[in-house]
Image 1 (cartoon, rainbow, N blue to C red):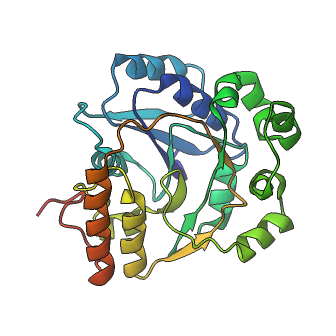
Image 2 (image 1 turned 180 degrees about the horizontal axis):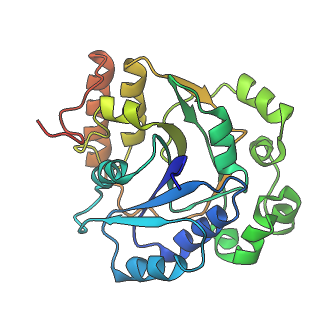
Length: 272
């Protein structure tokens, strides 16, 4: 049976977090999807884990891997786009657990000429480690009362978990946050991705997702805000791979994209 949507999940040497994420996809209300793991050079533990969990989950998993050569997320994402078999792609990270209606909301809101821009609800390390498979399958880790009992302080950001139905629509409408391509929770049409030539592979950590979205917008694709409709919780982790020179290089590439209203990158899926 042909799938309706491909979920690209980026990961690097985090099988414990990836397990929790895939349990979240095993609890989805919308079930006609495939998962592509965009693996930026993990060791054998991740490969072994994927072969084991494939026996437990109902959806197919395709493992796209390349050798570890530093932060090369843009390269593995382009390879993963090429590996998908559907017309529509949702991109997220291997540290973001989706609520049970996550894919359903992306499917309901998708529209020709748009990409969808979601957000996340960030958790501290203590609760990130504490969340069990049962907590995910029962939806406890998305329950604000359960989170409060485990030390989370309620703030306006908690509305990402609380708002449903007309309330989530209203908050999507009034949020001052500009919709952008966010690598942890965004979706769009594969044909649009190919027409901008995917991600700029010169870019490492810091704004590489935004630059991709900026080229989509330059192409005429509009961004639709769905941060209060598509809920995922972000597990805590260190970012030892972040370097100032990466951020500066990426900033210059983004400036060039904006100034020249670039649509196509010469450093993407197709090499020129």
